[in-house]
Amino acid sequence: MIYSLPFVVQPLQQAFAAIGEQPLEATATLHADPWDTFFTVIVPLSWPGFLTAGILGFAHTVGEFGVVLMIGGNIPGETQVLSLAIYDRVEALEYDAAHRLAAGMLVFSFVLLLLLNLLKPGRRR
Image (cartoon, rainbow, N blue to C red; front, side):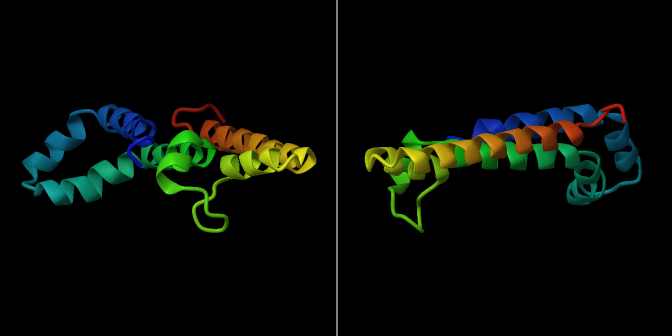
């Protein structure tokens, strides 16, 4: 989680900054408490940032190799991610299976990038 945190924090920070001061000042004039402001104003206005942060954090963790291998281990079916499965196939000299898994990871990354671009706020449709 800590290794992927920058990929989550940056989109959230940009989404919060894009809200601006006016909505927050309006809630202050209505004497809304901070939690109410956060859940009824900030979260709905910054949902694309939350979505982007979730997708980037997930994709980065799925593709991660070194940290997952060192901390989580490589237990098939429990702690194994796709990058570790590719590593196991190459280690076992099963290159065809490794190529299929790598192609699947490539397709997965393109789908995630396409999804992020389609959901980008301010995008012309």
